[in-house]
Length: 390
Ligand SMILES: [Zn+2]
Image (cartoon, rainbow, N blue to C red; front, side):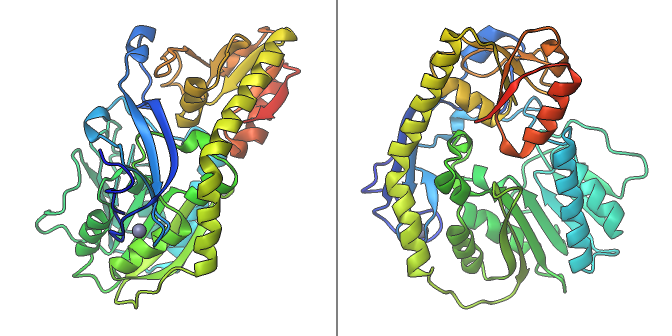
């Protein structure tokens, strides 16, 4: 709990960051859905105090309190029910297999979820793997070349070695990302390959395209291309590539163990990012208010609205935007989410089939990447609905 004057950047340790946003009362668990509306409404809240380092461009929540965030087997961020997302993962695995000599090598994945990515990479790459995930609750196929440790990865793992370490959508949850990446790097010391793959939300997309529904309490860090580069260089990793993916929403990087000269971020790129940061608080609030006005107008016009996508974006939208009178349904295709309740507001999640004969004529699409998929599902259900990408 510190203000801007005492907050120091978790990547480069510089002080005096720029305040990007202060938002109180954010749900501290955005992804976890609850069996009852009462439980959902009682989730802890926290403050989003997003600072931006003026030296390396890193953004982080200086009001983050890890004790408010609880990950259990209920925590389910799996997106693998979407064909669009499955294609993305398949293409990623094809690329890693094409670029890295993985046959008979040892793979480590930190935060492996249900093991879908680990399984695919082991099969296609002909390698063996170990996944770490405290919330792992799936089944491991009998012929799998991988196992799972149902616990948190710690820096002191005696004898844990790997040729490729992968970690997807984890680094943004970690309070000390530099220490975390150094611990990952340590597992590569014995390897001739020594590769690290990271994938995480793209802070540049949040700032530039106003992906404000992705600013959630669980994400203590928001990385931009500048700050991910700074982190990898500080960990003495040689960056093979660093790019945006999934319509700009993700950042991902492949780096190899090695020594690399540290370079300062490009002054023009940093200045451009800091200009976005300075405007972010005002544009964030303007976007929330604009959606409030749109929903109010839809309610006045007697329109029936469904929100499609009960993930972090959906939870954040529901927690911020008022009024919600026009909203009739919250929809998700994930069978494990159906019948459960959204944190803070307590909305029940229905399956797409609930929209048949519902009279819903407006669908709020929480992620632009799924708009085509959602449009096709709506037509199959016989809906003549207008799709609004949020
Ligand atoms: Zn910094």
